[in-house]
Length: 378
Image 1 (cartoon, rainbow, N blue to C red):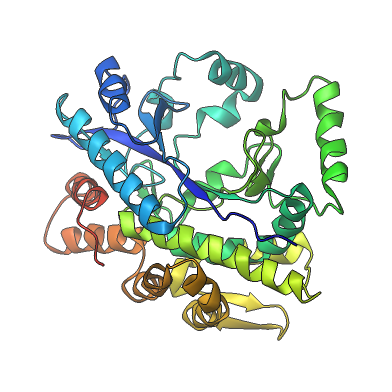
Image 2 (tube, one colour):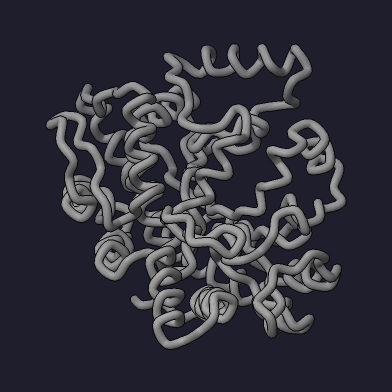
């Protein structure tokens, strides 16, 4: 079997805030999008709500290209927003925004989705990071989708950035998951034996007029409708750029590791979605500071120990893809904590110093603004 290209691309969805108050905007000035679009790297578009802006990198052949693209696009959005007294935050929820105050983007597709999903979609003032990896063979895409589902909780834990919702500490590291799971046709994908079986299931809904195409199936990992890629969608949006790139590196290395197993007529053991969902919940609740189930052993294991096992497994792939530094950076994420941990530390620290609740939440936004465009740690 020919080795896939392992090309990659990242989509990040930013929230735009008023720089002075930290509040989430409700109406995006038209000039922001146009200014960023002039940057000759990747794509930029409005998202579901007017307070969001999405960037997409070019198709990248390696992690160095990906890193450069993400950095340029983040800077471009920040520079454009600054002209209007705004700033982007790379986080999956705003610390104190009210979802009912947000306005939909005036785009036919989004208006149609809003009309269909009603109250479910109105609460989705959340952002994420999606990673596409180029895999030309359709059958391989389906096979790797099932196997890689095992690792979705690990990727989520590394990315968590949404501990607050409507000015409240939710007790979760990823409240985005709690909001997003209400969407129909989401979650961990079904297990399909072939590309044709996958297409048959999608086409049942298409022929019935329920969905236009598979882009309206919002699984946490899915074959792309438009590109020959396997798209990972489970992660929160990491606030620091190097964390985003490191998680993208871990995803592509996991896929390559599973491909290597296939060459040896081996594969990762398949587990019921019921069990995988339990680990997703634990990642959502505790992030890198918690434990996940090792289903083979039947015990809970600290996430840091599981991460060391992952790093050891994918090291040959990291060497082949020239991203050892990115893979090793996941240790830093685990040791210092994710964006969610930093937000909570900022919030509690401000309260201990005598800040009001509003002041503490504003301090969180200030940290998010700074970290979104902070120089990389490595």
